[in-house]
Structures are given as C-alpha cells and as structure tokens.
Length: 450
Ligand code: PHE
Image (cartoon, rainbow, N blue to C red; front, side, top):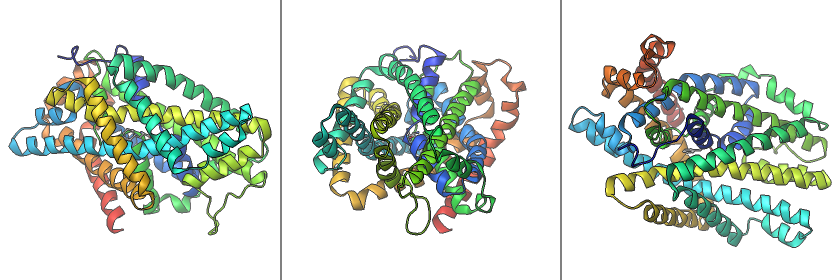
C-alpha cells in the first residue's frame, strides 16, 4: 500500500520536506518579533526548553502514528483506537485537523501574497519601474487578491505533482536556497552600524519576564505553530516515511533545523531593527515597546531598506524572496493534509482533489480579505492559538494512552532495532503520556482564563 500512495525517496528528502513545513513565516517573522518584545534571550530560553520538552515529543507522536498507519490522520487515529468511542474521537480529530490546516492556509496565503508582492516591488524598483513598485507595496485590495491567488496557484501546482515529484523535489530545491539567503542576509546586517545594539537586546536575557505566564503561552504557541503540530501535517509527512528509517533521529533533526532557523532569524530581524533605529527609522511604538508583527515587516524593515539606497533594494528583494520561499514550503504541507484525506478516504483523484480544495481555500481567503478587520485576527487566533494546541493534546493522548505501548515500541523498532535501550524510549513514553498533555492543558487553560 505504501508504494501506491507515495513515499519520500530518501532521508534527505524527508528532512527537507518536514523542515520545509516547519520553517515558515513562524520562524523568520513570528519568533524573532516575539523574542524582541518578550525579554529577548529569556524568551529564547523558554522557547528552547519548550521546543525540546514539549514540541519534539508531540512531533514524535504524529510521526510514529503516521508512519505506522501509512495513511491520513482520520484513518490513522481510527486504526490505533481500541473501541468505538476512541474510533469516533480519532476520526473527528482527523477531520477537524484538516479543516484547521485549511484555515491556516487561508490566512497564510494572504500573508505570503504580501511577501511576493514586496519581493516584486523591490525587483521592479531595481529595474527602474517606480510606479509599479509603489503599487506593488501598497496593499491594494486587487493586489492582495491577485498575489494571494498567485501564491495558492504555486502551492496547488506543487501538490498536484504528488509526494516525490512535488513535495520532496521542491522542498529539496528551495530549502538550501532559503538557508544560503538567510545566512548572507544575517552576515550583511550584522556588518552594519547599530546591529550590535540589537544583538545585546537579543542575547541579554531579561529574566524578570521569563516566567510570566503570557510569555510562556506565546512561546508554546510559537513552538507548536513553528513545528506545524496539531493539524496532521507531520502525521501525513510521517506516513510517507519508509519503514527503514529511524524515527526518533529524523524527528530530532527536523526539530533542530527548525529551532536553528528560528534562532538564526533572530540574528537577522532584531539587529536589523536597531540598524533601522540608527538610520532614523522609528522602531518603538507609543508605549515604548518594540514595534512588532506586520508593522515591523512591512513598515520598519522597508523603512530601513529605503535608507540604504541601492544595496537596500537588493537586501529587500532577498529578504522578501526568503519569506516567500519559507511560506511556500510550509503551505504545501498544509494543503497536503486535506488532499491526502480526500484521496484516501473518498477515492478522489489527486489533481481533482487539489484543484477543488485549492479553490475552496482561495474562496475562504477572499472572504477574509473582504472582511479583513473582523476576520483575519479571528481566524489566526482560532486556528493557531486554540485549535493547534488542543489537537496536539489529542494526538499525545492517542500516542500515550490509547495506542498500546508494545505496539508503539514495535513501530519504532522498525527503523531502530535497539530503540528500547535508548534514552528516547526511557523518556518519551511517559512524556507523551503525562507531561505533554498536562502542560499543554495547563497552559491552554491559563491562556483562556488567566
Ligand atoms: N510551521 C509553519 C511556520 O512556521 C506553519 C505551519 C503550521 C505549517 C501548521 C503547517 C501546519 O510558519
């Protein structure tokens, strides 16, 4: 069965695909801006701890379940269920997961569209087409619609080619480009005046903030979003891994790459803000806090680039190019979730499924764009702040409680015979059984009532 539904051809291919999914706007944009406004290195520390102790075990839960079933989340969770109730909850979780994945894609495509527009805006500026360049960075409704659709078309194009020719091939091409672009940008920005001030903010921890509940909640949300957890993305990628592979090692590598890119992006964004300050661009808001989120990306950074002349335009192009690639390797993993479900459960042909679901998501994005002020923040909050941790919780419960421990062990043994004697097997089972669900719930309840 595995071969007819597609499989990653190599370990490298899987790591690029899964890291491509994980590394996205969340890492390059979300993480550094949150770190900057939440105590710098203190946030970094909390993030690192949560990523290894919570996100990695939760990632492993998805990978193991997916690889075992070689199927989408709905079928996989039903397969490991032990009775009618857990079968029902499992199936429902899978279905909610693919709806949430589609919702995430519907807002992600809008933001990614802005990235493409800003990238082209720099390109046209370089060529001397100033009017076009101004229009491209003006966030006009037509522009927003057009680039959202263009981004979705790219995503649809890749996913319609399947696992090896689409996901694996494009992730393996784009991820190295992303890495090189990121490193070059960091090196350049660090060489500018004012950057060292930003390094201090990033690297000197403000521990008075490290234990604030709001900080821990944002760090957990970031870690979950960043590793693409809770919506079945990693489960479906896991289902395309060959039985020969050592899952704990593969999962560890993906986590490492994801964290590394987030941390390296911090070395780009935060110093860049202080270079901007040095060049006379405002980087603090009226309350004295660092400007973050969209204003940072689309006002402060372009403000900085425009003080740098020609070099600024090239840097601007590279930066938005980087963001567009990061978004694309993530969006394909979101689209694969509902597509795999309709192919496997309803026998729909891949191309038909991709087109139909792509159109529905384009429609959802259009509705969001027309009601931006009311819907955008709401969709982001529902899908990433609430749904992702809650679904992640259920995946952990399935891996830790519902699925029999010996069967989990049997699955893990496939790619690593003596897994029983490893540190992983000493820690992970009770982690995913007790620690992860408890902490996710605790933080979740805090975030609602706290
Ligand atoms: N991990 C991606 C990012 O950091 C977002 C994502 C979430 C991708 C959920 C897939 C599923 O931007």
